[in-house]
Length: 349
Image (cartoon, rainbow, N blue to C red):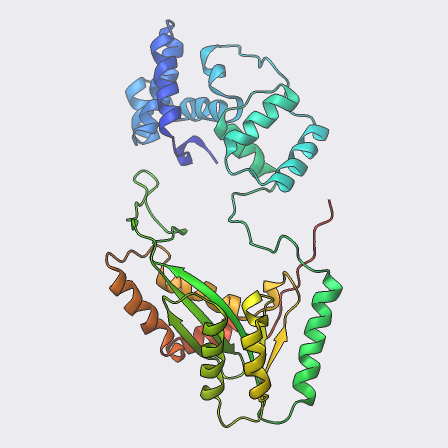
């Protein structure tokens, strides 16, 4: 990355202006003037012409600024007060970044200064991280107490075995609850970095509670949705809805997590009276093997990511429009909802 590709932040611009105003040597002051022109969107060719320097010279000043910091512009023979990072220090830095996942380059800059007594500009830190193969990424969510890899694979083997020996026509479904709040959830989007997108937010916290069951073989979805709390009585209504949706099949196996309302007495009594529907517990702390979690992710993407509804009734209508029927998203579901389970390998510290 060269200076023409750099996006100057307001903090950087203020610092460049401050250094320009403090500099008494006109030959050095012109360096800050040149960079400030680039920060204001003036092309490097025009900027070089206005300050009476070559494009190459202005490029060199920009390179020094990005890699060695603002102090190097204040001297003709600048020598950094500290040495650059040594290979062992770089290795330590990479290990620290991978372990702690810092959100901002400023945090990395502070770590370098504290650990190695070396001072970088924020942009120099970004360049340093890029050279080490690191990028700013959105983290992948994983369970904090995931079961062992062996336990996860044992569940997948059990699932495949159950399908292999089941009576023809048996329906296998994955169930769970999602609480969808009437709120705009910010997500990544394209936009102009000089005028970043702004999204409207709701002041309320109304929400819809959805108990759903996704059937991967048919790419179909059954649900009960409303403002009611997800409790044992609501679970019974949910199970009744699932059973009625597949009234003609010999058996329904519904995989669910270990939420307490699935184990309530009234739920167990209902299951005893309706043996055609069987609840099967998923491994504890393993949403990665519950296929419906992918469906919830798609629902949030379609309904609330970067999407503002001024009125709750509009939000509610859009949720039901998405859920009834989900077959409208058939092609996406066929790609997303395949029976390939993600196996999480717990990190060893």
